[in-house]
Length: 303
Length: 303
View 1 (cartoon, rainbow over the protein chains, first blue to last red):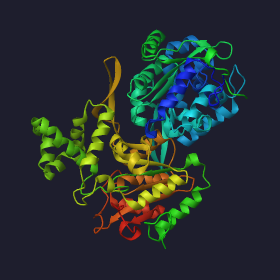
View 2 (view 1 turned 90 degrees about the vertical axis):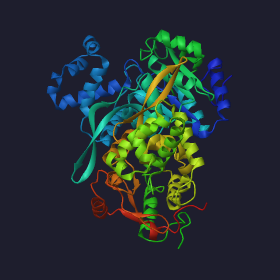
View 3 (view 1 turned 135 degrees about the horizontal axis):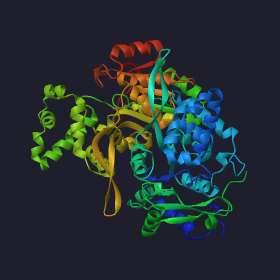
View 4 (view 1 turned 45 degrees about the vertical axis):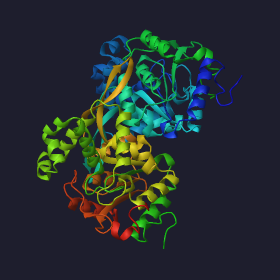
């Protein structure tokens, strides 16, 4: 039977667990009602590449049109020629950091505008719709019902904080201060007598994956979440943290098992050393597993 | 004439500036309506000592009752004997960091509970009321009207983030994620098979004063504030940042000139090297100056 508040969720133990959690949460003081969601692969599609990586490549192509000698940077050359072996040799992190330097010394508002332009001008390569319509309809419904029950929804992403913030309000109704991701550092300059904040290419602290997600949830949000949703070993620590608090809680693990409507793949390793260990923890703690194939009546919103 | 929404504000140019700003802000998209407030000396009283310092001393007295040899720590001995010369020689920052180690290796929830116990069990030394009733009634009214107009009120304090968070919701109706202060770092341990987050005694990054307030506003809140209120040179950068954006904005500087109802003193120096430079910037940019003596009909709430 269709649930009126979660119409895209098929009946079954996962939907039941959500409904039970919502009932239990009614007893919890509203200021403790915190829900955290990983973004890539949990709220929106992360294949064939992370959306943020496609954004960085898009920026590289624009930059190189104006400044052709950027092609001399080996990481850029590898990206532009689609040399997957070279990218793998560098490692995705090194490539991403090299690409971040394309935004060095610009103000945050300018960065935000570029992200918005990217979303307005590009389309997902396989699904021929804007990247920000590659969100999962069932998760949008879950965000909606949580917000209506007094929850503060938060995004806790391994991706760039400012990248996600540029769309969080419009796409997820999540305000910028509730986006916790990987941050760049800023530097302050005085220009024309006024203070100007500029991006650097340096990452601030650790990448927001694995145990760092727990630390950053505390420093950014100030309390333990009651609901945590993720899809990869990099989310497992966060799910375990939510799931071992003293208040009613819910850990949701999205499994990508639908190669017809989305993609079928295992999560990549984070601080949990393998998908296997994630699955073992999920089984031990009784996490609710979402089968995209079986639990979701539709995956993406109507166009 | 009394203003129905700001009844504790006397008529005059400061109240007029607030009313004008509120009218102008109605045209701004709600997600851009960000107001930031310094805490000590701006939202609540910071004399004769910072409330957080009294909290740390309270904790030291409790710790030393159980562990008398803590008295051997020179910074602690100076604090306990009220040796102001020795404290000045160490510097307040070094003393505060030494006191922070009293909370090493405890979970954030335990720290929060200690702060709450402090507020429940102690009273302000001069005013004989709980410290959390040493808030300024006119500023509570300002927070209230801003919230009712769709603003997200945020606290941007030089004090400890987690200290302020323990009371921000109850005292100011500000959720924990909108408190931006000086952070300690955390470390993660596995205890009994579950992840446990523990405080360290190390400060994360810079103290949240001066230019650091601008950087931390961006990293924590993701956009430039439209209203900024402060009282010391350590707030001047933040006020200047709000005041030089492109949208309608308001910078408010609280001047402590009421030795009858509160205290009369100049703000202490932050990155703005002197009160003089703060006043020069205030005059140049036309900041609204709050005279506690003249602009506020009452200072503290009814008991």
